[in-house]
Image 1: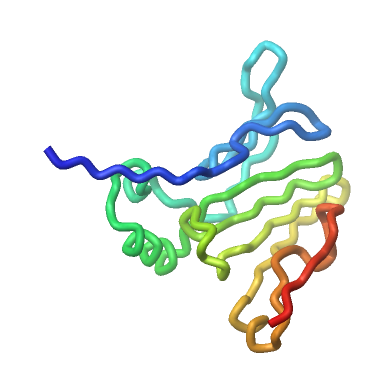
Image 2: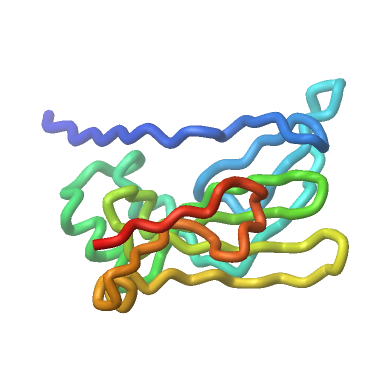
Length: 151
């Protein structure tokens, strides 16, 4: 028998935020709150980003990583990371769950107080041409330090 396996670490399926304990699968559309009785309660359902289907994921079916990444690029298929605090939900989405695809670092930012959803898409080819690469959100929704790389 021939077996093909593929494993890639993907941190943060379980995290604690100011609102409590949360669980989110990188290909799932739902962020869950983990209740004290260990049940899951949906907190956010995100359906704006197309996720990689189970029958195409290297973790499930194996295969060639280069072909997989091209398939995800061609079909605009992503994996997501969800962050939450008392003001925002931030969804970081990456082509096929690959940190190597800088062109895929994009964000959805949902303001819980105003109900507004914003999409932040990075165009690294254009930013490279201007010699100013930014690997984050310019208006600093996350409360951290903004930074840029200059070429």
